Image (cartoon, rainbow, N blue to C red):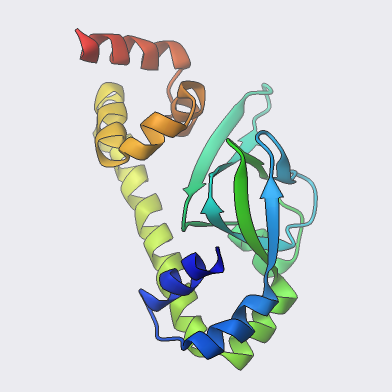
Length: 191
């Protein structure tokens, strides 16, 4: 399964198979059951997760007790609370498995050591974070520019794998919609 990470890294920077055999020793493999928490709000954010297969979501609970999803990660995506991870501080977010998931995790200390030994991975992580940041900006733009129905249709058109794998109530939470409204849009689309 580690060949997925090897391939993903080599999409952005060059790492030899021999070098990767050293790189992979910095990571721990984890099987995560559906609904299992990897990080809970209020706890220290000690790990960065690379999803081998499955799906994770990151959410916070608002003052009314409602969960608001802010991010998903599926196969070959990374997930952590970047600021809490960087500062080794407590997170405001919870990361939970949406389905049975396998991840590679790395601690902040090990990642820092990894970057010293393999400086080209600085570029890899920079590119990954830039892609993530750009996606977040695009999502914010859509939230301001599009109607609620357009937001949902744009999301399902551009990310059909999410529409098939992620429960409707989580997609609604991510898009700032109610599950009932998403049901209406889906029914309208079918007719």
